[in-house]
Amino acid sequence: MARIPLVTRDAVPPTEQAAYDAFSASRGSEPKIGPYSIIAHMPEMAQRLEALRTYIRKEASLPQRL
Image (cartoon, rainbow, N blue to C red; front, side, top):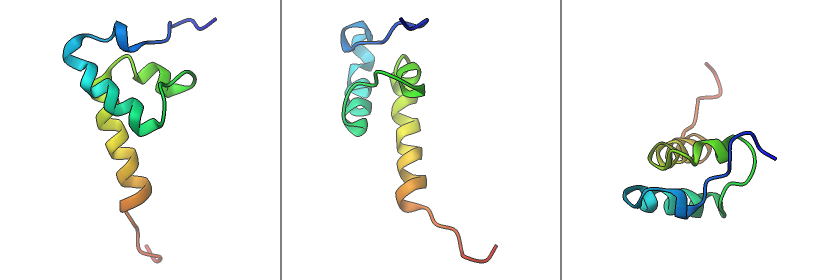
């Protein structure tokens, strides 16, 4: 049993359900384990963090020589 209960869509305030849905969709499902299950308690921040993660993994690049 987790020390912090898992968040569900029903537990999220109605004003943040759109952000929760977007975060869950970008992850492929509702987060059940790991740090994303904690971050999901703050859907607006989770959505912004996911955008940053996507940018770093797929769009950003560094030159070979630093």
